[in-house]
Length: 304
Image 1 (spheres, rainbow, N blue to C red):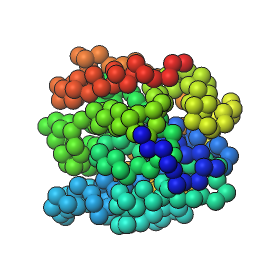
Image 2 (cartoon, rainbow, N blue to C red):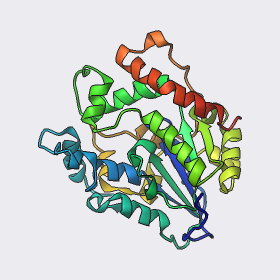
Image 3 (cartoon, rainbow, N blue to C red):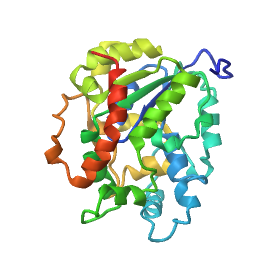
Image 4 (cartoon, helix red, strand yellow):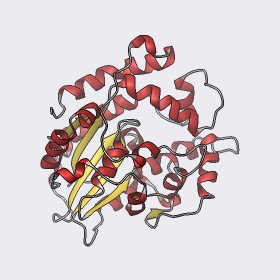
């Protein structure tokens, strides 16, 4: 296991690894109000989707009809209101690692939230010195929501043939929950033998207990003020993140991926997990493939 660390030991560094629709943005917003914290929001998402090493750019798919390129063009046209947004054209995986290793004068905590599948198994992009957190959610909740989001992203007025079709439009490798699980095993064996695992239902239904245990585990101070926060998006302006992703969130039709999270002011009780009969055949197939990996992580989660 790597033991040396060239980063500032005075700065507590925490990485939250999600898959989409697991309340990662809501948790990030909650923690953004900790005094002395700097948030970096989804830098590997930028490298995966928008940077010079993106699968889209290197697959020859970047055409005028490419829905991701159309989203990028629309996002670029939005007025930039994010002082700490970075230019995606320089966002390689190596550049992201440099930002993770950088010093942040005046800050006590560095919180990075990202999507595990966007690391794309480039594990050497993660420097040592971080505590790692994995945010999970039942696949029967994740995938219906993911399908709705992708349909909105590509501004479709009809359902595509399947969720797999949508993921191919997004140039996403199959099995994002499996990729999260594989990253967990890598982290355990090479970077952090005791990563923290949080199930989003526990966060919603038992926020005080779950947040307290999380904060104690990673070295962030907890108090009950973390249970409520302002119900607006102002804190987003303090985040370091992709200009395209942050501005794209402001788009009227394709954007708004963070909208519910940014309007939130607390963690609300979770909804019931859908029955199998409530899921479409395409969503059920993908969710069932993910279920064994989720269940293994669920057994290792923090218990409220």
